[in-house]
Image 1: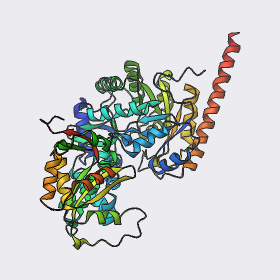
Image 2: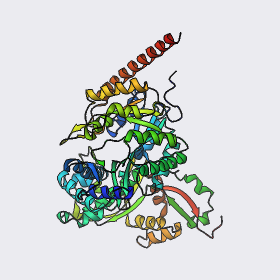
Image 3: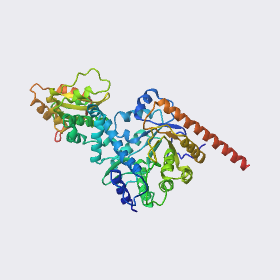
Image 4: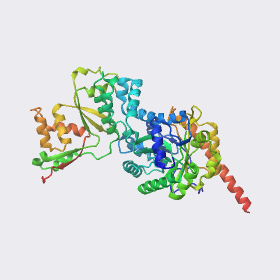
Length: 257
Length: 294
């Protein structure tokens, strides 16, 4: 094994659990190879614990470690940065047979990934509402809002906000979560106080979903009104501003102010 | 004046630094303890958010060393451009005293291994590393330090050793060397290398930083776990390195069983004492040299 490609490919397979091929290593032992086989697995399992702290609390450490180790063995890492690992952990959790009796786990995983990405999302300037004053009133409907990269919309059949709130550090006052109450939409936002999900009404969620997809403000309002005749956009805008979710505005193409 | 630490790749003060890890961030942020400099893992501060804001704030009060664990410079797959862009952004924002990476690989076409894997010590690997270090230094617009890593195995096909490879990499690319004393000790036990020969093979002007840490005993070899205090033989090897290279900015690393910051600072005080000793020895040697010259 005298080419670099053969040496690295050979050792990659060893580290992923394969046998040591003849001629690859001159200093070696089962214990030494085992250290490499365990090291990257443990690094990834530890990183997953940090990214999915609520799942960890929900299922307990031994269960989580077994579930994460199975994921890591089946899924090669897609980045050297451990913070990027586990983007599709929700799918794994949903297909992990021992977790089948906990149907809300995949959605909790999706929420935790959104919070994790929000934590590391790039810094961008926040939208200054004073700029709305510069927009002619008849053009407001043609505005497209751009959200901060930390902002993510999630919908679930489970009460994700309550599950999240119940598992926050130092939390002693939250009542037990009533899973039977059903779910809804949450918007994961990063404010100066940290990253957290915000509960949305169905009409707010509908408007935000349209805005995230690039719709104009008028189209987003229409989507919300379709669900709730009484919907007015002012309070939604105020909420999005207080959640520091908005980054910028632009006029829809073909519209001139 | 200490002419030995090349200011081209290290603006660190020649003093003891501590690896800043998450359990201590809040305390450091609130109390700004008297520590000469901090080193952080670059990847923990990529993109934005609280981590970056905190590091940017600490940078006002301390020199910062950015130590990467994810570049995998010895991998045959192309350099990860996203990773390089994120590092470049971070370097622009923090203006660190020094930037370092490892003499390691972490990827094949099949996937990543988030680990610091020793490279084969061959001309082919060296040529690749030179190309990659050039790419990083060009992107960052500054030289970097490359650190020797711990190893539990060795590739059968090799034509040099790690110290010789580092020396040549530094000569060809202008990169500096981050000398990890604990890794030299671990590899002396694991691979049978001679610590004295290792130090002797390194070009003194290229040593920009030193690391020391603890390790643990495994089944017939030493594991580089950074989860225990530095042991006596590693302190002795540090003194030997100072004798050879003079005083060098030195970092105490702890990544597991992380104790209270006060305890780490006590251990860092011992680094400071060893550095003082090294200054004294260097001054005496210089005075003796002047005497001889008369």
